[in-house]
Length: 361
Image (tube, rainbow, N blue to C red; front, side, top):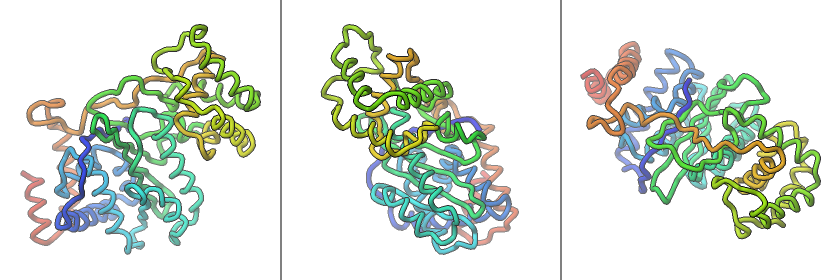
């Protein structure tokens, strides 16, 4: 699958209860039908596609371009399947404080056997999108979907207050074959956006393997006090080192004492065999990665990627040609898929028949 991230106008507020209750019903039916026809793994695969996910928002009656599509669609699916474990789909997390409680929800679920693995997956995916891709979007919504066969996908969203936009990140468990590169080299199913951001620091770019290895080797060889001393030298001696704009930092940006404590924790708590080991250390965030990336560039001469992972314009396009003309072929193919699913299941009921009629016109 091509990598995509959805870029959406940031809308505040919540969905009206009358709409959300209907969303739960129709999304439950659609997801249930996909499971019947194609299995739970296929449902997770489709949820990991931002375009297909966006269609669910449209079908369920939500604003096609709003950031609220993410929160309402994931919450509706979570609530509708909460009391139906027989379908083999389990949903954890959500928005704000609910996202923070994701590990607790996972550990309390009696229907999956590898709870701790999923806690790690939840933490890693959030850390990558919050710290490894420094694009100006702070993650505030995180949802993990798991099936009975240990397949999973993650849908999470970040907020950029200055531009009043939200960006949605999608993951699926089978996109990377090698355990060494899983989560840390081009890990998303893909990204859709209306625009590319400038000065993005991307520690998980397709060409980031060498940078990651350099950081690991440097941490293995050097003691924390020497690393901090080297970093302080870089901060103090900006006339000696010609730093590109993407690494612009000042003394006020960093607390070297805190950096020292985090480096000690990395050295003490983790066997540094993979970049994932660094990310899973508590306290490692965007600033720590920027510092390590800067040191790696100075020492080894290999810079952090500044390539925004977003590649494509939004969804199907717009009727007025913005951001680009409607892709009729893709649009019709998607509508045909939904109509086929509904026809095969012989859905009855006026409300659902009305939706079917709209889809077919």
